[in-house]
Length: 72
Image (cartoon, rainbow, N blue to C red):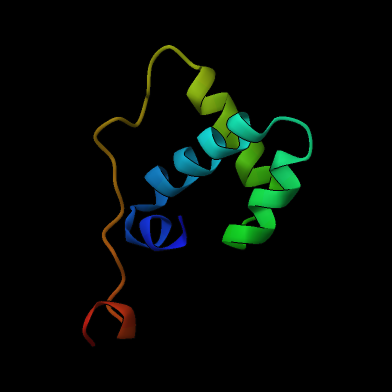
């Protein structure tokens, strides 16, 4: 899970965390927040995004930063 999470864009990381949280149910937000080192508010935001019928930022994705994890 963590390897997949690390390979995703920022927006997709948020959404993946929201999906995994939904599967876990009660206590899922705290568990996933610790697992992926995310703020619980970020996960709650992702749940709202997943519940929305349209994505206002569908074509917006930040570029990955250049660093040791991607070859720098």
